[in-house]
Image (cartoon, rainbow over all chains, first blue to last red; front, top):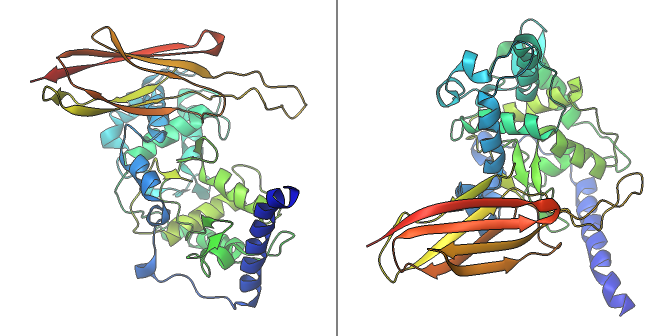
Length: 267
Length: 106
């Protein structure tokens, strides 16, 4: 009985060991060619795909609906709602998420969609910024990003972002953590393999913020990257740090042309 | 504030078997977890889901801690007559949410 109970763990560590062995022996492969890129959606099970496709079955839509309420709610000492400046989000926010992270000339660096929302809150609404991964920030971001669903990702087309894309690529291809892995070893070289039963995926952030079944909630791309870093036994960065923004900028550049899926559903 | 999403066909033929899908936002805290300081997190789940079709009960579910957050419940029924389908979720800490949908049977 005891042996039977320990078997799955044993098998799992065996799989992990095999995958790691493959990675160690494989020499680095170049970036995935544009035509061969696939969204994580293609690697989902039929049931999870059906869940994402049906707006009444997609739990991410619960956050989108909350975001719509926040969009219309007055907040801060300026007593202003997002809708008062930006009007109908279905018009004004169409395609916006496909362009983020975007270069902010005033700051001289790219800002993510979450950061842009918080900048708007503190500068225009005179309201305290939402905390990272708070329900309000995720809801509002999901609502804004939902308006770009189906549109091709075109962020990082901006020349001024080039150095940040390069910084993100450097982080992506740098060995880190106690397992001494790079992001690219999984997501460029072995994306069609499995890791402990899960698809590795090409790591295209097409559907963020997304509903992850494992989390049982909606989360941001930075939370997902944090998850990977902990898996590599590396020290995660702080939410909103320049490293995360650079990685996000690089990942969106890598996913250029793929359609936005927000709110996506992933296992 | 609980959000619910319903998928009920607006029209159906008499005697047709229709699928009804419901999704509600709820954290479904199991009561088995502890906080980072070791304090048990109290249970907070939806315990019951009842559906009435023109005031007649057609579906009932009892929920337990093993059910994931944001429960998605789907079932089939026969479209008998035009009217209202009312949904009610109740749970711990006085949680209660109601939604309804109208259906036209031809």
